[in-house]
Image (cartoon, rainbow, N blue to C red; front, side, top):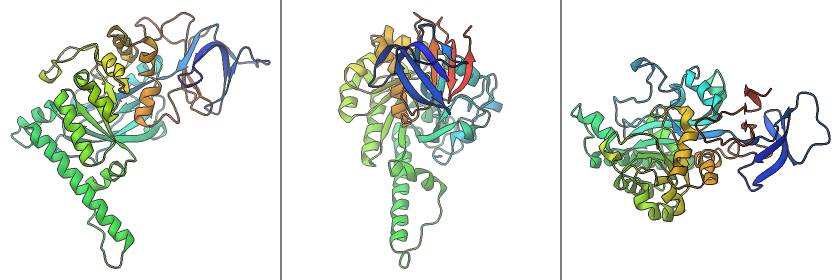
Length: 390
């Protein structure tokens, strides 16, 4: 399929092509060109000078794992019967028929990270998925990390039961205990594989097994934390175990932006268009994303759906613009940067030859982050999911 006569914002080193075209073949971007192609086959799409950009990516949601319009029956986000559950996998709780997937597609959101919740110090495995499909296995891009949580959420859940953890100390201690066990488990497995005659394999432990990719840096450690001191605890734990950390929310990141930049730790910032609904969010400021970016922190913007409905991801990036972030940088926070943070940038996040054809087209002159804007064309893996071209 050919799409031509478009202003192409590639979000890669090619920058913006004022008048260009792309060719999509077998679900991928096969060719990008400048000017008008010599041959325009039947079925091609004339963009009429519109803006062609990559599909939006939300780096932190609970899409499909907390279903729209349901209470307990559709909430599979937190297995809050055990404070340490790395063996839980978000993919096993996601319902791809949740109508919010369609709302995401219609607003140009083509991929998300769907995550276990933050009731537990360790909640389980996060997965990156496309927003189009009927079977979650076919929508999966890759597992991208293990979810940890610091601060008030685990404290509040277990304090009501008079069980550990009820302090920040206990939350961190539970995480450390699990990571120490996994590290020892890995050492024992290495000993067995290197010398099976003299060493027995450790007794199977599903929690330790789930943490092996994390300990080997094949996936990242995603830490839910709002307050600056909790962010520093996440950095401390990550350093102790040589983890590859990502901060989720980072509400007070602006207070320690220089430290985050020095440690090269990315932040998935948000939700932004919400109230200060709990004490650890008292420091919420719209300038947060801008201050962190100015200090050199890699940032993405998220909705934390269902906290903010998924279709308001572009509006969340626009809120970051209101807080001082440049428009071009805000566009990156919902395209290529979340792809890089999630480790899926080989497939998505920019209009680049060889990547999945996850793209969206806006009428000429439209601001894709504006509340009133809607894409006239949305394509996911080369499949047209929305087509209002006439």
